[in-house]
Amino acid sequence: MAEQSLFPEIGEARLKPQLWNLWHGCHKKSEGCAHCYVYRRDAKIGVDSDIVHKTSSFGMPTSRDRYGNYKIPSGTLIFTCFTSDFFIEEADKWRNEAWAIIRERADLHFYMVTKRPERIATCLPTDWGNGYANVTVSCTMENQKRTDERLPIFASLPIVRKEIICEPLLERIDFRRQIGHWCSKVIVGGESGPEARTCDYAWVVDIRRQCLELGVGFHFKQTGAKFRKDGRIYQVPRQLQQPQARKANIDL
Image (tube, rainbow, N blue to C red):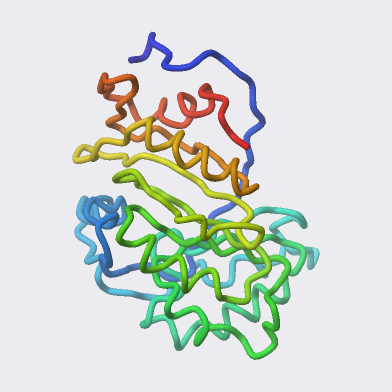
């Protein structure tokens, strides 16, 4: 695979965000969680991923240098809570403090992914209104069952910037024309790791077609480790999964 390209070469700038894992640990909630990378990594070092705990990085966005300046520069994209779920129940006791940090650093953009849209409404701060301008919430919808379950809830929530992420994409998904102006983008990707399930390129381009018809942005993030294209299954090394997706040149 190292010498074979599924798609022609194209160029693309890469974002360089920072990662803020303010708490760690989660509970497997749906089919997409079966081979969770957090569980896989924790198992290697003997950590119980089911135990949710506050981390030493909790105050990272507001940490300052010896001159009193924020260590994280203005305009940085912050991937938030990627080894847990920002809306998980055990974090209820810490979340108001987290919202205060996000509010203080209005000059940063916080990006969080959840499989728990049913909890969002009760977890929002009192001054949320229609949403903080510096927060994007992305809801995972890995198959048709979870799309039908989560999409109506997510669509109804007051969030300034919403995205949908179909990763790992486990089957063909029909959004039933329920996405539109409220959804800024749909992100699609396969599954990584030694037990990765197949991601079919036909499913990817079908989601793209729906996004094009409904005027929604689309991003093909990665192929995953096991990728089917034109009836052939490719085993894609981890370091090539995002580059191969970029070469498809199908983002909207």
